[in-house]
Image: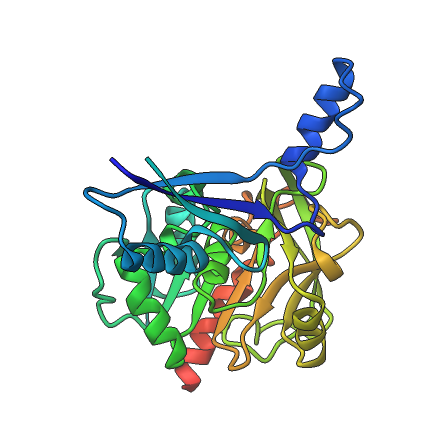
Length: 82
Length: 231
């Protein structure tokens, strides 16, 4: 079944406490090269049949109105897989 | 006067909110997330908890619940609505109040008796306070960090839309020490701390006079009763 992938990230200028906690743990285990970590979400919307332009437009709409909150997050990518 | 208290899957403090409303003299009506009928209530409380397990974002799924459709419409028409903790997050996700709430800056869940300053008394939920009054009510949250764009913050400050500010300690990294907001009309108020847990002697925060005697939260509920009588 084809999927529309929506990727959401916390806004670049906002503190991402989850990413910070993971970065600290990585540094404790010797991974100093990975200076910063930021964690976002990958949301898969499964569609039966072919993904149409209308499906993509609707996915963009729900990505911006519901799947992300524009105050704290950005939709960084929407694409089709499978 | 009838106050509706909403229960979503994962709501925790609906019974405490109902008890607080009753102590202020209200008749309480339980509102169910899947029911668009508000049963002619005169005001609504969105209580604390972890609606829908905080999935997606805190309050985001609750904001799409059938009952919220009716509440958003009624709030835009002037119905008094109070959002407490998760209820505040639901109000923000419903765009009834601006900005967003993110994980506490220090990354820990925090539970404490929190001192606040009342910054605005021209609302349905704060008219019984004195302007600048310092109150103490419990705070308990993991995602209470208030954020907004600089433009929104400027508007909130300029228009006097900040209802409560944290005093002595900012428990979650909220911008401008914001603990709670009001809308322009003054019928919608949201805050992270929990007034419904400070309404009855013996169960509230400690005060200088006696242990657990703090009842500062009761004034939220007596305020709305007064606003409804005068309406």
